[in-house]
Length: 230
Image (cartoon, rainbow, N blue to C red):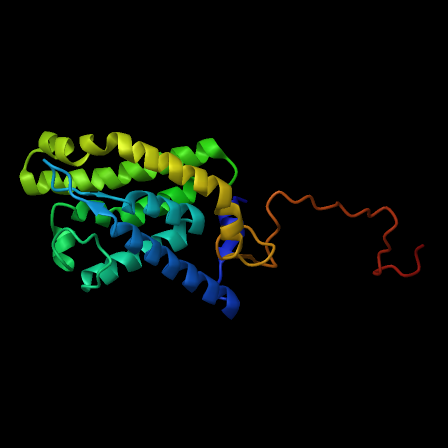
């Protein structure tokens, strides 16, 4: 039996755990919103320099795939409704998601889920690989929308990716270090006690994956169908 079948999501999480998860989602949304306020316009490109990218990677890595994606989806919803969570440079509300930087924003939940899925606490190379993969997804979304609006993929890459390669590489490394150091501690707050995974509980009728079950010794068992026999 595969591990994915042996573990099953259940809605029976304790209220205190649900409250912690909700607080984690809200904290992740707030972190990305604050990082977005650090926005510096760059000459020759409609895409500003912000700290949103590493914040998205950190939120996904620390909260895990499910909660990280939920946190970033909430961030996009609040921004689309007009709350000032996006970078101060650019169109407000829903128009931001349809503008030149909208592709980067729309890729945030997927990037957070990717980092949360593949980053492993205390394993630096996996954290670095997950952060780089998340960053690639963000840039892929951004370049795709720039190309759709401008009609030229080469120009879109020159405007939306090339100016940020060095800075974003450094930010991804910083995010990977933080994820590697703190992910294990923080993710443990959003799990059922003693159970692996995010919100997973073990069904009592399913064996624990990898567990060894002793074979009963039947040499001295008594067959109750024949009570006259020893």
